[in-house]
Every structure is written in structure tokens, then in C-alpha cells.
Amino acid sequence: MSTPLAQLFKKTQSENRAALIAYIPAGYPTQEGCKAVIDAFADSGVDAIEIG
Image (tube, rainbow, N blue to C red; front, side, top):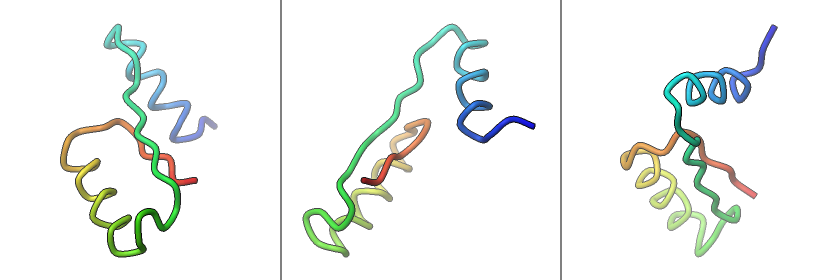
């Protein structure tokens, strides 16, 4: 069984491209601001979002 992240890397590899993974520190700049940034990342088409 493969993980969602492994499936993502297989998909991007089959498309001959790197995965675009966005990162944001948890709660930065505020909790509400963080939610807005995550929504913006998702709307912009990133492959994955890492919240640290």
C-alpha cells in the first residue's frame, strides 16, 4: 500500500516534473492568516502543502 505522498511523487514523476510543495509555519502570521494562506496555496495549484 502506498501513501498519498508516494502516490503524488509517482504522479509527478510520470509527468516528468518536480512536485511543487508549499510550506507555511503553523499559525503564521495568525491562525486566520494561516488559513487564508493555505487556501491561496490550494487555489494556486500546488501539489502539496506542508504545515510546520
